[in-house]
Length: 341
Image (cartoon, rainbow, N blue to C red; front, side):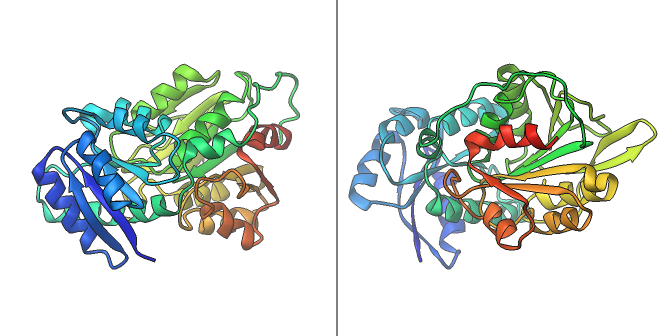
């Protein structure tokens, strides 16, 4: 299947680079470009693309207003392409307005950066083509209030969560439903680009009862705290006399950095059957190898069910490999976690 893409950006340079990168992919066709939101809305009507890559800071009609104008449409799905340094908060806002993913905009013609961009951009565009809009899938499930806190029969040392396409919205929903006295530390990998995970952690920290931080080298894991893996670095868990802590690593170089597999595999090594792992919405199979390691160590794996996934990829491969003990829609994931800690 060929994915038809419209590239929207007020920068002629960005339009050129994005078009060239996408056109080089065998299953992607760039059907047109647009210079701002108004131009994009016209081109969308004319060309009917599957996916739009959307800049946020544009004249006449910006990216957020363009997303609002597209609200309620079954297609196209939108991948935001923006600068982390200035647009990270706005990009997270765009996810809440219905965008399905974020890519860091190219700012130079450095060969290595363009190669990394090509892998990331093509993967996320192809994922978006398969995605159900996050807002639509979330709306199809009833919400839940944070469960009442109480005495816990703690049987876990750590909860690890992995997600990709649609992940930020799913993670937010899960964490908002957990109480402040949740007794087990939580470590999370979500496929966000470099520069966006700090804003994501800060937003979650402001909106959730739990304390949420972006991972730093040697960060200690404690009950009631959530550690979000830093974009561009793998998060692995280690243990010493003081308990569990996080280490940031650059290797191995892979399509996803941070990778769910790296977090899950390290958790299996240092906590074994005391791990509860959760695989949420996402394209691809990141988390499959890590889930194998966890399953072999006697840990419990939970996956999000197809009914609520934006993309039923990562949970599907874990479930079909018979590595997960439970599956649940996103509205029930927090309750499932509480029952299993």
